[in-house]
Length: 215
Image (tube, rainbow, N blue to C red; front, top):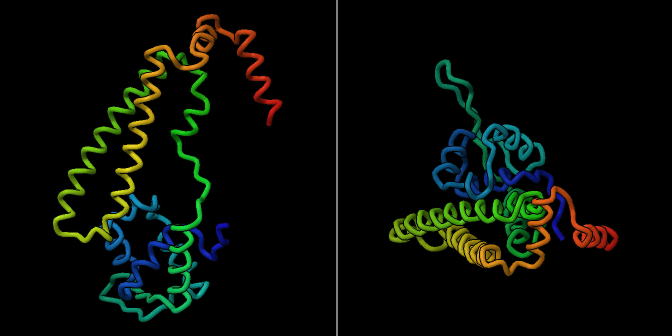
């Protein structure tokens, strides 16, 4: 079971991992995280960086090392990770690798309501998505091949995961499209009839009601 974190924003995890390398001020943290492409890994919202840094300091996970000012520039505070912060970083990483978290991808949400569209429209949209996924796979493979020549695999493992997930989705969507275009998808005639008639058939109504009462 996932633990309640004092600072649960994934940006906090990114900041802790950055400060585990060396002390930095927030501007340096942002530059390092961008350089490591962490906004792609963690969905970082940069506008909350200073708030997250402040919350980490408030809970004793990082601490001020020194502050300095050059000319009229704003004061820069350099932070370092504390022992409690290192323990949090290790514990959080262990949890993320071992405990499945409930996630709700946008694509899954779209699949859950795709009946509102005619099946031919759905097939066309999935064809567009499949083309975009294949383009993404090609781009990631080129990026991985380029980086793997100079970056240890340990620091490219998330790219391997992205490729595996994209290829799995590619295969699943391809199989679904085959069913839709070949007419073998269960309930396809009723689904099509619903949109052609502008309403649910008696069989589809019964199916929908059974699904509701089974919850």
